[in-house]
Image (cartoon, rainbow, N blue to C red):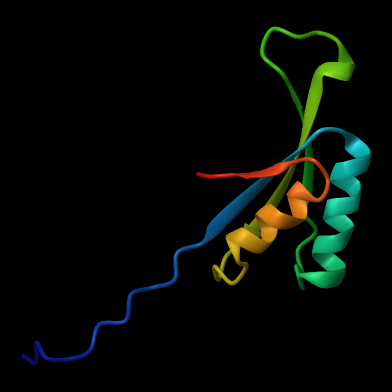
Length: 91
């Protein structure tokens, strides 16, 4: 048995969650992801009501980006979200 064979750790899929203040910002970020970041799978837009809030105005929007090959730079994604008054949620 040869224990000296090189070990290549497998790439672990990543899910990036960008938190945006409203639907318009979320749609703009999703569009930028496909046009400028090379995201091939369309990002999911998810309305996230804040805890205890019933008013639709008090909802954040999440843009969920599946990154199976872990190729997207988390800092660049954070910067994109920040341009739209949002942030990247660390998982």
